[in-house]
Length: 81
Ligand SMILES: [Zn+2]
Image (tube, rainbow, N blue to C red; front, side, top):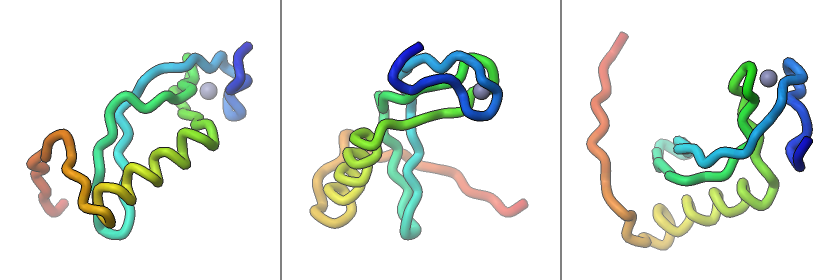
């Protein structure tokens, strides 16, 4: 048992990991590495603390509104289905 509790979908055990998070909003995409998240061991559902979500918003705002320099820029291929 930890601060994330058990998975609300499958009741599986949730463990904290650092994940890569794709933050997509307002036609922008920001990849954020090392985000702490609770990940269900059984179904993989992810849970975030309120303070983590706030921090993600803050980072997104810094890069796209305050023009803070990102660590690096990825080139992402896109195709039509
Ligand atoms: Zn689960």
